[in-house]
Length: 433
Image (cartoon, rainbow, N blue to C red; front, side, top):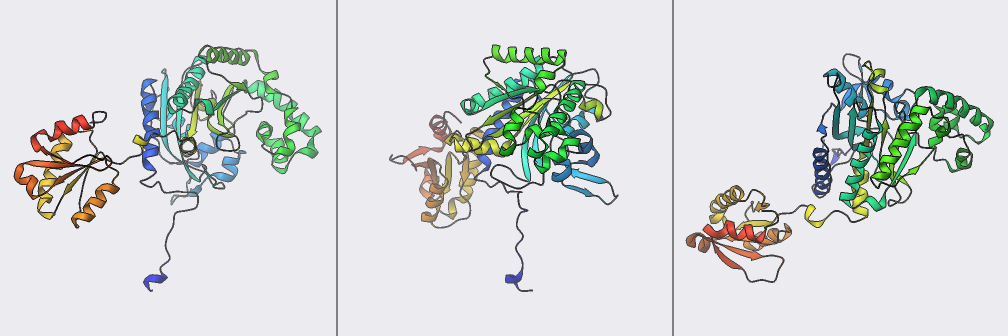
């Protein structure tokens, strides 16, 4: 077969490469999250990306879109059904149960990593996407609901997003209250059967609460007039929700109550919330979560109160880029480009580079490699976006000095003794060296 006939292999649609030009934006965001989790006392957990299919069917719900349409499921060589994880909560619960993290103790956990759903790729939404999630276990009161919401709010504040997002709240009440409400809701929808779209008719007998989450504009008026779950809450859930809203108000967090907010996963109960934005065009969710007190028991553990949330990294990076909120200094590059002026200076430059990296651990120093003419070396130095180049040639080596060339400022280059070079760079890059 000729070389030209070999078919090029490309990435699977909806599963994207993260290129070097993109990585600094992700690192900036992830560093903010990691610092925040430490400040709030959350510990990181990492789980496999492949789990038994039954884990998601039992937790998410067999009649949800995720399980019915979107999961990447396959049989392995032992004919065991496995699935690429479509979300992180079920895996986190499985791991916590399996390793005894829930027995007579509380947990504040967080994770990040890829999730997989087979859906139509669109801007900010992909088939392999990345989430950061928070899960807490063993806390019954509304204070932990408030805590995880306040954590997310602080992230928005520190990223400059607070004025661009809206907190939406609802309560799904207890399972008994939801069951009674479900009957009322089905009766209402049956009276408006001719307005329901095909998806909603299918859900009418399997998951009628999900109909409330429909974005079909033809159903909007009918849905707005539907009975509200908030009017059917049990007393304990109502008190829980009232206490939560008082806590958020005391903390200065604005919110709106959205009676149609039900979330797409079956395991939620009581508090549910979403942070939404209109900065990306149509309204979109950038973070969502709530209580799932019954999930641990549903997966075979002892009854354990739990609350958490997840946020999509791709969508948040897109939001930060759209609003120009990623600082220039977070976009990578280097501080100094160390340039041997010819091949005879290569060993001296390599040695100097390592000395400077030892003396100034925070200095971002890139060493020129690959030879070339002096002109091509200077071009590469300029292309590195470093504000300064260190030139090392025959004269410099003889004098035990280096020449500093300023690549972004109109300043005369200067010769600096090697013994003083570290101090000179430390002063020049005081903020990071």
